[in-house]
Amino acid sequence: MKFNIKLPPLPEQKAIAHILGTLDDKIELNRQMNETLEEMAQALFKSWFVDFDPVIDKALAAGHDIPEPLQQKAEKRKSVPEEQKLIRTNPQFGDSHEPVEWPDSFTFTEELGWIPEGWEVTEIRELVSKVSKGTTPRKNEIIDLDEVIPFLKARDISDDGTISSELDMIPEEVHLSSLKRSILESGDLLITIAGTIGRIAQLPVSLNNSNCNQAIAFIRLKDKSQYNNLVLFTLKSDFTFRFISEKIVQAVQANISLETVNSILVCIPEYHILKHWNALSDPIMDRIRANKEENSVLSSLRDTILPKLISGELRVPEAAQIIADHV
Image: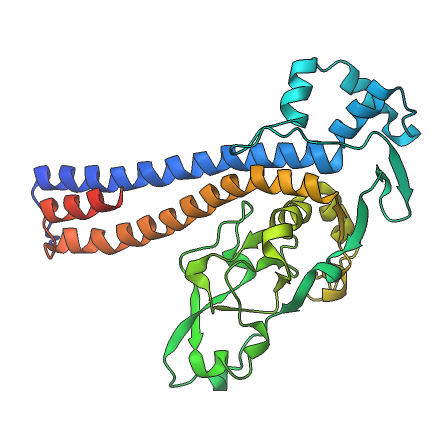
């Protein structure tokens, strides 16, 4: 059996391929940029809030004793060139040239062991206005209703925190009634708590007022401007992953409880250090979010334009102009 398939002329096919290639190249460029930016922020977070490199450096310079659990790290820091230490411990931001004042000693805590003097340990529950999870609507709730509200599932969050652009939808009536406890707000921190556990994302502005199922917990901070990046990278840390891994309940589907999410520990520095961290990390995270939003728009644009180009509904010059307006 033979089928006749109508295709555009070869030159037009090549022009279409070029247009789509331009979109794909821009999407990939944004992805690679985000990967680099994420690595930069992760490295700074680990140095300051996990390894305590600047505090160890200052303690060594002052001749203070280093707690035994941190002595191996201290030995490694001795071999780091001074100029490299300065870049990491006293990065400049904006128009400020004010140096970061680090403590030069440590204090012991029951929760995290040795931490810098003047810092404190708290549970996430102390920093939030709400921690909750979603629900799956019953089938009889969605019959004959228009599905207009994006509905996130664990599968929609990738390992790198990207949220899929192809989401299921639910009716607004269900969203506002039986699923009202899990109405999401932009900026909410998301963590998968069933199935594939521990994937982390932050809800973009484009998904404000969306919803989620029971495999996703959301964390709504009381003070996002102060604690967003600190909590976000704490959630992504190896320490937190080990912590929640120990709390997994093996049932029909492996899961962790909301109590486990609430009890995740956060190491909070003195205010002036938190201020420096935010000044450095905010521009990085803003750029990452902007790139993700742009990729979402570009992916939707690609998926919309392709069938119109093939059908002839949209001509190549028109498509090229649309792409030029977005790239």
